[in-house]
Length: 95
Image (cartoon, rainbow, N blue to C red):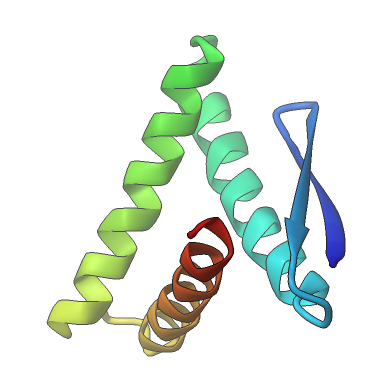
């Protein structure tokens, strides 16, 4: 079992993943943290749950745009496929 620590807004979150998925999970965590940091810089102080929700919604919006083929950035299509694969992997671990 692999382990990754993701830092979001100065707080560490320790996550587990399948062996070999550490780099991928770290990259996803970095993407999420960047969204949260951008939001905090643009909006200012807000509660942690609200910040995490808003960052998650922004990423969900990117995913929906990629699925619909409305994204101008082809990286989103690849990112959407990777997020779905990771979600399937994590769902298998939870069951």
